[in-house]
Length: 415
Image 1 (cartoon, helix red, strand yellow):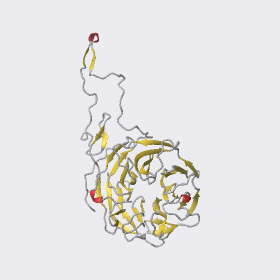
Image 2 (cartoon, rainbow, N blue to C red; image 1 turned 135 degrees about the vertical axis):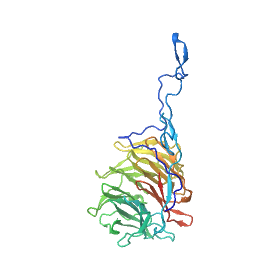
Image 3 (cartoon, rainbow, N blue to C red; image 1 turned 30 degrees about the vertical axis):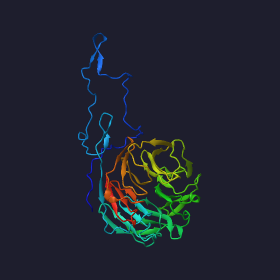
Image 4 (cartoon, helix red, strand yellow; image 1 turned 180 degrees about the horizontal axis):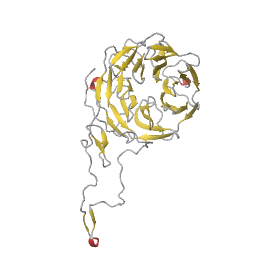
């Protein structure tokens, strides 16, 4: 296990308030009740003016040291932002026993371990090799290929009741609708049933909702339908085609709905079995490859690329009941990009990298709408199409391609 690259810190970001609203960005300005300039004088005998007994500031700002912080963005106690420096610590993951490097495969967090499957290896065809990484032990182990699904590129995957669920993707010369349900504790695969399964497709989106795995969409607009897999009954139930066709979807689960983007913006209510089109007022423009992550305050959307190939750096928050879009501040935030990794830590959003090779990252506090940089890691390089997951304690970034091909190295970032 490699050494730390930068010193860590206490974050200084507080817990979410109950029913937390979304304040406007920037410091709050208190109205003094007067339009005139405060000159530090007051009326005295006979209406003449003289100096106040105390014309100094009414608030004594707190320093980072006063608050026990050596990094992070906080408040000085007087309503002004206070920058205490860059936080974070990068540590290299063990390479011993690591699975072969790949890109365009599957990477998920199952609740205790990281699961990696398929993708393009250094030679070119999809590799059947899977791997499981245990961050507590900083150790890798292999995945059985008995009854495993085909090795594919661009499958979708999600954690499902502590197991790994994998579906679809491309095999040489065609696409597939095969998949598997993998038990990490026993190293046993269970093939998914074909009856009721979605049609063969590549680049579908997967998410866990209500104890089921949802599969939606793909690389073709005619694949704007999907299905829900229930591991308790080992069966599929259909999701009808959306009211507006879509392709190359990005999808997150809010627990109530499946939010599908990045254009058109749609939602599917699993309990009601109905689609709804999200409002266009205040919504992100049409784009591809936007970053999306679910948070307790709503679904955050960042960046992406237009039909003309222009990268974007705008950010939005979608809240439900009623469906409403809010534009978020991007002052001090990332450059225009298609984010590689977005994750919710329980306190803030982490965004790292991009799909075309950049190596910087940012923390974003949704409550204060403030950005601050992650610690830089020059050794990680700038892998394209790297993937990442949040474990509850740290961000794990793995794979992607750089230089001569896919890489098998990974890094851990602890805020």
